Length: 429
View 1: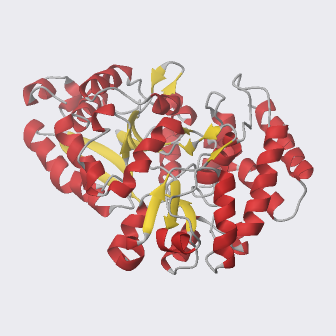
View 2: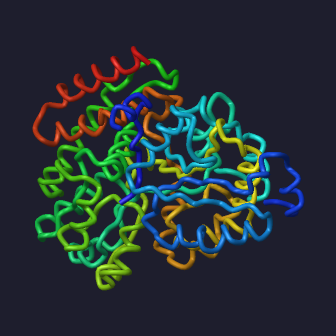
View 3: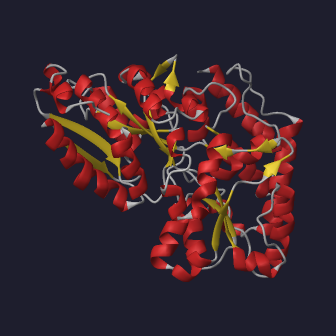
C-alpha cells in the first residue's frame, strides 16, 4: 500500500474538513531566536523512518545548533486536510511533508526553495529529471524532494513457475497470457479498480500511457482522452480483468490487495515496497516467494506512477531561514543517507548520488523501485501539472473509465463519460 495521489483542490479539501558549521546556522538571523522549528509529517508505513528522525537526527541537530525540531506526526490520510487548513489560516508548522501535485495547489502559500534545491542537488549528484515536474511551479522550487514511494508489480514466483513462467512478463500481453493460466490454476491476479488512493492509479495510468493515450495534450488545455489509443487500452483492460483477476477488485481500496496477498488469494498485484516489507515481518514464508518487477510495457513503452514525498516551508513561518537551513542540513549526505537506510529503501531517493547506495543492496528485490524513477510521471502527464489534473484524480476520472468498462459498459460510453468530465474540469480551470 502506498500514499499515491489523493490530490484534490484546496476548496474540496476544506469542504471535507548540509550546514558547514553550527555557528553559520546560529548566525543566520532573528528567525533562530526562538530556538525551535515545527515539522509536520504523515506517519510512515515504515515506523523506523519516523523513529530515526525523532530519536537520532533531531537530537543531533539540536546538539549542533541549539535548535529543537518538533516532529509532529499526523495519521495516514489526514495530511492534505492539515496542509490546507494551515494554508488557509496562516497558522501551522514551519515545515511540512507534501505529496504529489500539492505544491501546485498551495503554491502561493509556500516559500521559494530554488536556492537550497540547487545546493542540495550539487552535494548529492544532481536531481532526477522526473521529480522536477512535481515540485517546480512557475519556474520555482516549491518543495525539496525526498523520495519516491513507487508502485510496481509484486508477484508469486512459486505460482508463476507452476504455470511455466520463470521471469516476470515484459509486456501487458504476456502478463495477460500468464494470468489466464494462473487464474485457471486457482491463483488469480488482484488489481485495485475502486476508489482507493494509490494502488488503482499505480497501474491504470501507466497502462493508459503505455498505449499512447493521455487525458490532455501537452498544452495543458486540449482534452485528448477520446482517441483510438484510449479505446485500445480500455479494451485490453476489460479483457485482462475478466480473464485474470478476482471480480471483487472493482470495489477494492488500497488495503484490499495487501489483505488478499497475505491470505494467499492472489498471485500478482501492483503495490509499493511495503507489501514485501510487511510480509518479511509477519509472513516470512510468503516473503520468500514474493518478487518485485517493473510494470509491463505496452505498444508505446513502459511507465510508472510518480509518488513523491517532498518537504515545503510555509511563507507565514517566522522561521523561514532557520527552516531552510534545517532542510539543507537534513539533506546533507551525512544525515540523509542514514535516513534513507532506516526505511529499507521504501523511499527511492531522487538524488543520483544514491543510485547504487548500500540501501539498495540490503534487499535487491527492491531495485526495480529505483529503476522505475526513469519512467515515472504524475497523473495528468504529459500536460503541465496543476489544479485541473489534481481535480481529475480526485474525481477518479481515469480509474472510473477503466472500472466501468470492466463492469460491462461499452468502450464508447466510458470514453464519452470521461471526455465530458475532463472538458468540464479544464473549462473551469
